[in-house]
Image 1 (cartoon, helix red, strand yellow):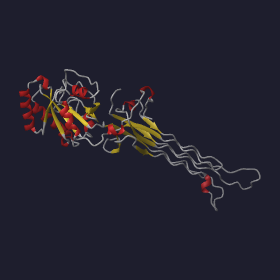
Image 2 (tube, one colour):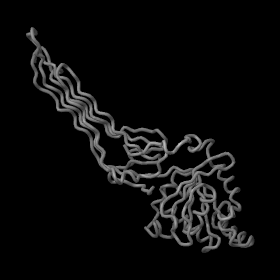
Image 3 (cartoon, one colour):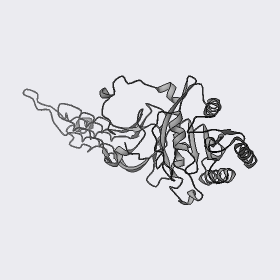
Image 4 (cartoon, one colour):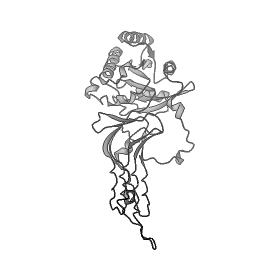
Length: 351
């Protein structure tokens, strides 16, 4: 499945059905009078957060969503049928933004969360509702209230408990493959990871979601490399793992570079708890690892974990530290649903 975290869509709720102009005409009834019914209500536009989705790719192909209008009122005081609501299913973590992206109109953070985004128009009055002692045969009616319409942006911020960040080639893909069942691409060149990856970590009876984002380089806030747009996917994380390549450039400089980009991005990322992990310990001796760890402590790191994503050395201690930042039950542990047969799972579409 291709990853897409932004999409622009058009929404229009259903208009109300028009009221009817009708008069009762029956044999032996001399004064039938007006009996035109009211129109039905138009359909609402409803957003619903569902489990099991982590991309907005379907909105690339379905960009216009229009609810049905209410039915016409009819004679014999029959009210037109209301139109069904149009329910648009989105991944948990989706935000609905105004067309100029300046205002957050809705934010979906829980499975099953629903928001009536645009209300359908009310049905128009039929002529029976205008009857009075001075207006015995009214012929006026209402056409029904039009539906609302607007363009909005959908922006997905993946919901993960732990975020993984670092410079390109810091070993993030190898690390996430080591601790989860994710099969992220691994290569000896920069920007092997082009889109965020999610994986579920199971450690000492606990489960939590780990998010890996593309590497940051100096100037990412100005668009260098892949830029810093994907940092939005770790905004909701409780703790960050900062991987630093022991065999790369000076670890202290790498630490400062990434934190400078977090500060430039904002959104409180620099204030989040950060576990610094000196990675690729298998490529250096213990003495060099200790020297680099001391430099990182001087650069501002509270504690440095020496690990190897390739061999798994030191990872258990790092995962133990992560558990202390997690709530009693993570979202994965609370909302996990087992699917016995994947073939029986229904095909998904936005509506």
